[in-house]
Image (tube, rainbow, N blue to C red; front, top):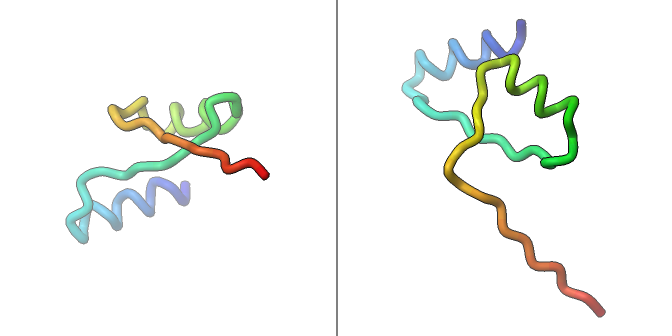
Length: 52
């Protein structure tokens, strides 16, 4: 699988952690990353919307 090859390459070049952002309501994508071995991390995404 492509993501497995990417992770193997990252190991070879010294990467030890991979981060990604996923919309909490996107269950399909969350399930995909869960199946790839990702888990919920300690960081949170903060957002500030500027209105007119």
